Amino acid sequence: MAQKILIADDSAFMRIYLKRILAEAGYKDTIESADGREMLIRYEQERPDLVILDIIMPDMDGLEALHELMRLDPKVNVVMVTAVGQEYMMKECNKAGVKGYIVKPFKEEEIAETLVKVIGPGEREVK
Image (cartoon, rainbow, N blue to C red; front, side):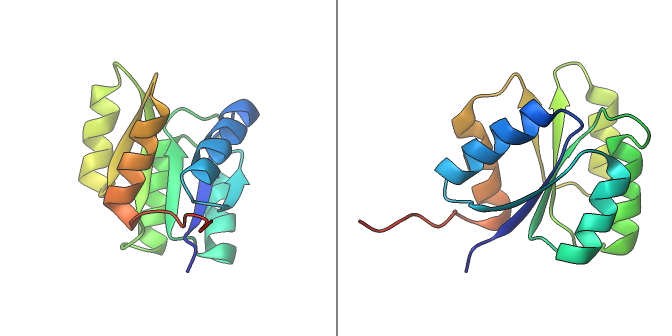
């Protein structure tokens, strides 16, 4: 069964970019949100297998959204998107229970490797 992934990032470019990388890795069922509040609503509606959550977002940042998400579902699989130099935020995310990180600038294969560790491999098309 295909894993559903929710991408939460305020950058439309980054959401599209991640969605393409995920599709190429076999994760084709993706949904998007542009901020933390929308992510929480979409999570409750869709109950995805994984949330990819950007740390730096306006209105409700990723750390605040992460805490709210963990209150909704303590077993949620979350991978944070962070930039080099955000070690303090990463420590706080670790305390909250994230399962992994995608560190910018990243290599596409690192994203797939991280997701495989958290939710298993994507579905590959059989030819």
